[in-house]
Image (cartoon, rainbow, N blue to C red; front, side):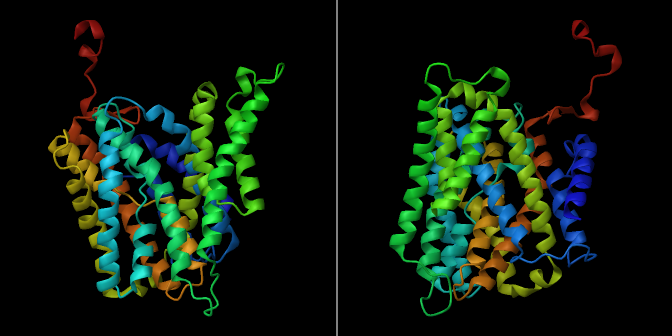
Length: 410
């Protein structure tokens, strides 16, 4: 049933993508709403819960894919000034947002301090897929697009060690949870990082043997093979697969720019498919009972983290930057929660820590609100930059009349 639903949603998204590119309709929202409609909160055609194997497996694979593709894209993000604003957003804005959400989760939602910080760490990553009309348009200033792209490309990996360490700190050895010591956690993280470096280097050395090498037609499959190998080895060895993915993608791009360039389009499409599938499944988990379970305090935290904490923390981090006011507004608003937060939230749920279920429910509501709010506002915000064409689809209101359409006549 899920496969059929995914196929239908994918076809519908393709058919309405032209309209979606010019309106508040979002293809991401199509998958989220479809999942909610067929899930137990809707018609009950698909019965899923966070413990269902397909939920964890799909979210795990989706995040691995996204992190690997993000890693390979780092090489293309270089350029004059490209790291200045992102560095401030990551080095100042991200800790400020982390602290703001942690304070709210403790004092308003009632979590203990460690769990409150864990909730904040899970909600720290952002995802540019819900701001595609901003990051995907050349009409939008390049520095704004780089800021959002680099920030979202790096904060997944930066948040991961904090999430894993806080899960370990919040665990109770006698509470039945899957508690592991900080030493084991550190070993897992270091193992993932080492794996992400060693495997691509060994494969690169292998390709330098005389007589070996990829023909142009198959060159995009080289990085894909590295990614699949990393995924398998990381899970078999117990190393952290997500750090392996991000580090591996970055190393592949550094060692073989030609292969990375040929893989770029394929990687982006694979990441999109993985995200859409994860959105469909995540939507099926969003039930009315979930939204009611977090209580008034949880709703206050969810709303304020969306409309106050992220915007204020980014504005403070970018004070004095050369960004214009509307660029600063767009950057502050677009901090959408995405697939990293979904997977990290599932890690929290399955960790067995004392407040795991309550923390997951708050995280899930925050993600759901963020997806709806950000995926339906990227086009209106993009209009602030006089965008005449979004996602390659011209705006009907701004199309030239037939008599002036020819370049010579202009």
